[in-house]
Image (cartoon, rainbow, N blue to C red; front, side, top):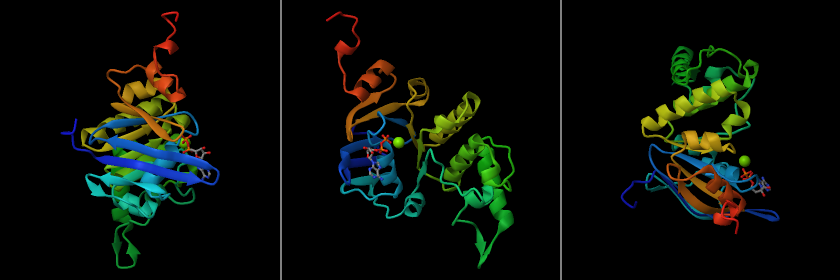
Length: 253
Ligand code: ADP
Ligand code: MG
């Protein structure tokens, strides 16, 4: 195990909000090329942990290593520049801007003070093609259906050349066909050695796309599971804190 290089290691992460300890010393380790599922009931701390990873929140305690190097982003922009792209459920795209503007926001190719629009459109088109999206890069994001906005957010992660792509409950807004398109993108990303952290409540999705899973409960990581040898019942039991054979109930104990 120690031979496997780590893409990401979050250690002893603590985050307090007034009246709440959202994260109480969380450990998370993600390998290159892995789909790592982050599981837990509502309020377990999944989104808070990912906001720390993104640079949206600073942890009160704890450290992060990215490909073995200390990583402590002060802002989401710094996080993205370091190769961490987080796609939130509430997509943080700007609805009044075009797809191309959103994809390369703050990172557009420039010639002096001028944005090189043709070059930006070309980069945006390439990213949209990679996620299988056929809508024009000139479309206004706010005019697109939510699934297309989701693909735009994923394409944005691609233009940033992210090493770690986090998807926080993408399926909540996607239909089955769109979800399969996103899964295809996830598989192509991990085939390139990128790591994906996938948050979902739906065990069928987790079993389909995930390699390993970390279960959070009450702000702590309570287990790391290899999904080739773990069933959904065991994961759910860990999530709700009833791990053990008594939950199965088949023995009649
Ligand atoms: P999850 O994504 O697993 O549902 P969250 O990370 O959103 O969990 O929340 C973890 C805990 O932290 C919850 O108790 C939640 O109420 C609390 N929390 C999250 N964000 C904030 C915030 N900005 N201010 C105060 N409490 C928060
Ligand atoms: Mg959440």
